[in-house]
Length: 90
Image (cartoon, rainbow, N blue to C red):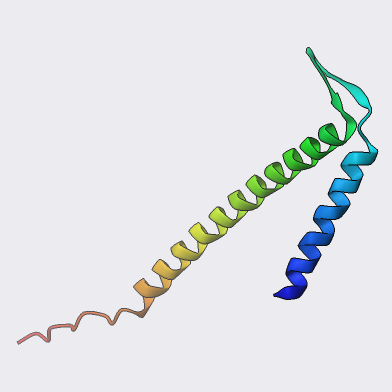
């Protein structure tokens, strides 16, 4: 657990150094949008956007897999049920 905290502190420190070294103003144009801000902020927001997009794709895939598992479990349960006893003709 301590190693995880140290790793998080190291990544945080590296992000802070990155942000301090990349403070020059940058203009980003996309279609009709025009955004101006520090280079580090623009890069970090872009990375955050990519993480959110990738997480949504992963959640969608996970949801589909869970749905398929439930479907297969229902089929298995239906196959494992004993057949109703047959009545013999009297």
